[in-house]
Image (cartoon, rainbow, N blue to C red; front, side, top):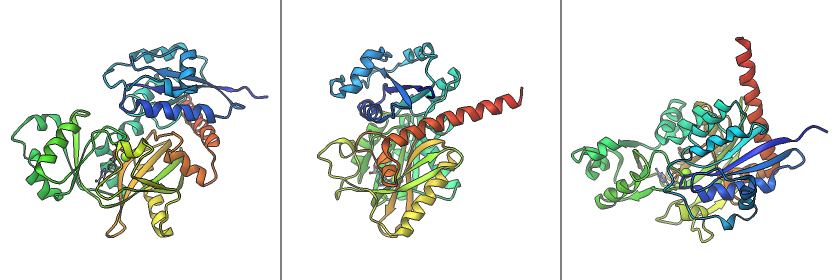
Length: 361
Ligand SMILES: Nc1ncnc2c1ncn2[C@@H]1O[C@H](COP(=O)(O)OP(=O)(O)O)[C@@H](O)[C@H]1O
Ligand SMILES: [Mg+2]
């Protein structure tokens, strides 16, 4: 019998997606193939501490006991204690948002010389920033919505024309979305139709980031795809999200049971559209140098069926209602096999990098 691999399943953290992370980890913990892997839950608590194994396991067994959102915690430097777990064969970080999904944690794994699941440093960092993602996608020939970015010093300058609704409306139209460039789960995202709403939306978005994007609103439904792989990535079919009129895919609509958004897997769309979405998803995955996995989200513009990139999620949700695992289930890869593949991809990438290093010795 081959030896079981020890998997450090890291969850929690200090982002606004703390609860989502716990639910994702809970599902992974329950679905992981225990004939292949020994899983060690590692909980980054809302005090920024790395909890002991027993407490970590308890949280995943009963996620409802978890304490409230840790927004205020700015420091999770205790995670450096991961270096005291050299027996781990591979890490599975399911820490959404800042530090977990933006390349920082990935950098720590690289320094510790350990394989890990999901995107590497570069892809995690660029896809965390919605403006960088747009720029790379555009280069690859994928459509993105028109946008203006505003940096903190520009926001602090009261005379800056970008703060004037009439100016941005002239550039992008009156119907706008305002969002932090680096965030997730729709936190700090607002739909704006007038000067007053614009002012409030900027204020809200700047709570979360030093760079805010103002985008033209794309009217239509949302189409998401899941991509899996390193050098030869595979793309799932597409899932579709239809929002209620005058609403969008807000935090509440994403995670609450009384959501007014409806999810459809597979998307009920003509084959040609699905193929174009899949083709564009692959282009974006490669342009942003993703490996392991990513979920790639588009808007399908109602008026002309144009496929317009919204964003790339290096660490998509893995809750029981999440799109990424569902999209692969739909094409015949069950949740637990998906986890096995993701772990193997992390190990494959690590081994490849090792060979590369040895070539120069
Ligand atoms: N330009 C846009 N046009 C229409 N809807 C948008 C636009 N940008 C964002 N949205 C809506 O806001 C949601 C969240 O925005 P998104 O860019 O995906 O940020 P997050 O990382 O928080 O998910 C989207 O799922 C969509 O419902
Ligand atoms: Mg999104």
